[in-house]
Length: 240
Image (tube, rainbow, N blue to C red):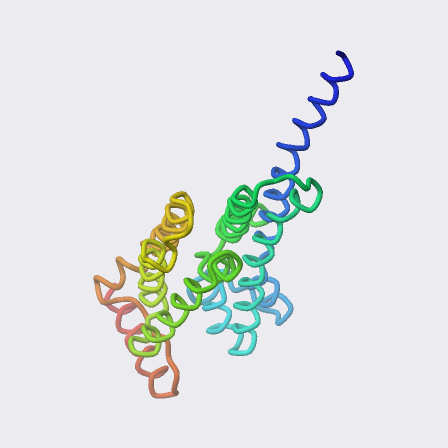
């Protein structure tokens, strides 16, 4: 009887311990501030420049295009890696149901996204999580990820507002989750990913305020656009 109790305790430790380990690994990986590290390698602390955000957009502006793209890819990979962490318990314990593994993959991807937004290494002051959220979607809902990314590209090119494009892309993802495209998925699946889309929008709340006031900076593709942006910024500074 004591042996059975010991085995039950071991099994309980496995059932709860392995998912917890997977979540922690995903969070710690998601918290790696690639944007900050890339800037540091180039001798730039992006927390003191531009929007002072550690995300790929600020790296693009302050460090350079190729470094911004690199930061975007690495931040996206964190989301993909997070979803892969969800397979860890299934690899070690063979009898985990498929739906349970899917739930853990979504939760681990979420953990990576939260790590990017609230990194323990930087006193929980991180990025907005859009790139990492895209990686999460590519890991567990690739079609929604592709549609959201395509929408982001269209809105970004047409408006040149990164924040607006990100918020509208989040709306697309949230809407797709409730469409017939994902009708075969459990209810919690749509609810969780919709909540993540809402979280991404909430993280842009300051940008939304600036958009409403007309003070949000547009992305500049050309020298003429950069000159117009800088002139507008100078005018806003003088008005303060």
